[in-house]
Image (cartoon, rainbow, N blue to C red; front, side, top):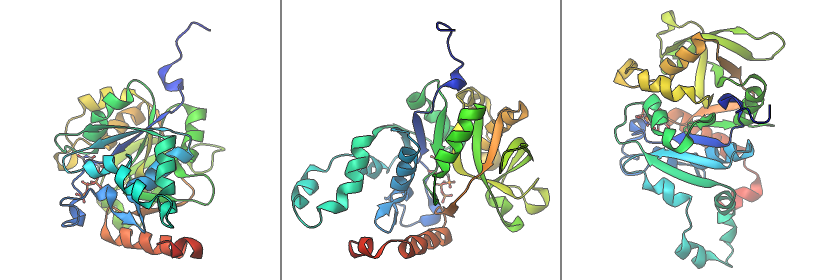
Length: 292
Ligand code: UTP
């Protein structure tokens, strides 16, 4: 079928969207003038870890949804002539190696969410950067580590096989269901840790939760999500919830949930942020520590 247009879901994933417009109120006053996504775990800002994970998955086009007071994100991924010139040829030059390599390997585009109407609304705001193709979404405040493939890589392998929306999930203690979107689903035969989602509820109280399988900040979304989001009314907290839009896809059998291999830190709250900092400090090699 050489001249027949491929189904739009069949295309490879070449773009990753980073909703980064939220106010980060749990980190006030630190986030009053500094984006939450720029808070560092050791010497690297949270969003850089997310970009590295996307790049590791073979994605080179980064689309970032920012908002007022978030310009530091754009500056971080841009050239800093004065600084780079200043440390060129000194013992500190290597400290910029990672960010320079990222800048060379990726393209970055930005759009602003003018009113913070929730994650679903932020993703819809990103449509102008994504267009009519399937795409990945990374919430940088969920920091993921792994021993082999990154979480996004694991999800891309599933997408290539099933060509539908994929969400990453993990088991949480029953008392914590009210912090997450919680799914109900049937395990897929022969696929370890993969579920066909049939229901999801945003932040349910433990007694109302359909399971303890919580959605974390990694998604592969098919582009029909944009039309669904346009029709999705504000849900819990008066915000447009991505969970509500995903439920529409799930009811049509088009959402899979993957219990990923690896560990996630909730860096959107102080406890998780400190835990991640300690973990990364302990797992940093002595030679890298010297450079801290
Ligand atoms: P969170 O609810 O965890 O982030 O949103 P927040 O609102 O920034 O933080 P708190 O609760 O006030 O402390 C999850 C992700 O969605 C983005 C956030 O930037 C974060 O990456 N987000 C959320 C948006 O981009 N726009 C929004 O309107 C809401």
